[in-house]
Amino acid sequence: MARHKRFAKEDILEAAFQIVRENGMEHLTARAIARQLKSSTMPIYSCVNSIREVEEAVVERAWRVLQDYQSRSISGDAFIDMGLGYVLFSKEEKYLFKCLHDDVYAAINTRCSEKSFESNLKKLETNLLFAHLPREISEKIMFHGFLFSHGFASLLNSGISTRLRTLNSEQAIIDLFKEASAFSWKGMKAAME
Image (tube, rainbow, N blue to C red; front, side):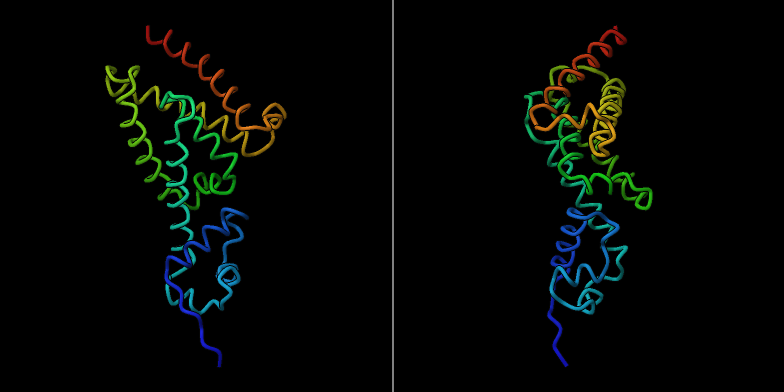
């Protein structure tokens, strides 16, 4: 009888993450992980309790990848960069983006979303435009920014918008996002005055 290779839980989670990143959550199975690790399924089940546990770890990691995207300095404005990071994440990490909006993982996504919102709001406290605003106004601006970014990101991720499909470079996405943000920001400022 052949000996089974020993893997750490981290190896299994890394293989699972790569499967989802490249092919989507629907392709994540114990057999797919075993193929990735060049193993049988036995070592997988000796390290994790269930595939659901693996799926949840992948979703949580997807949120961390999103936070990395939103922390990038692209335009020099942290507020715009958070939205741009969200949009670029949806384009470059298509399957991870879908994990963040899957009702199957609603509890994790709600918890991670709230944590992400608070973290991003805290980053904006250093932004000159937000520094002196009451928290409820900052939260409202953040939420409106999220609605705008999510709409843009979802259209870009799905590929159903012909106008967005023509955005074939990161710079084109950045330019369109900045232009649309400027229109949106002017409207929010007028509403606050």
